[in-house]
Image (cartoon, rainbow, N blue to C red; front, side):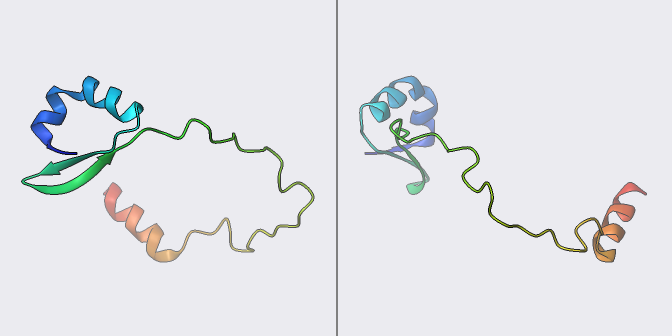
Length: 79
């Protein structure tokens, strides 16, 4: 089903109910699709904490250094 933005704004609660029931709703602006309203997959398992425990990792040697061009950008914005 495709609807326009105005209809989506005025009927959001009903559209959410329909999406929760499994319907896919496409929201269009000036007839061109821009978004899709679908239900979230509630069956997705939560992330397992510590799944990479014991695996090696490396932090780059220049991790704490700010590149000169980035530093210059911050300095220009503050003046």
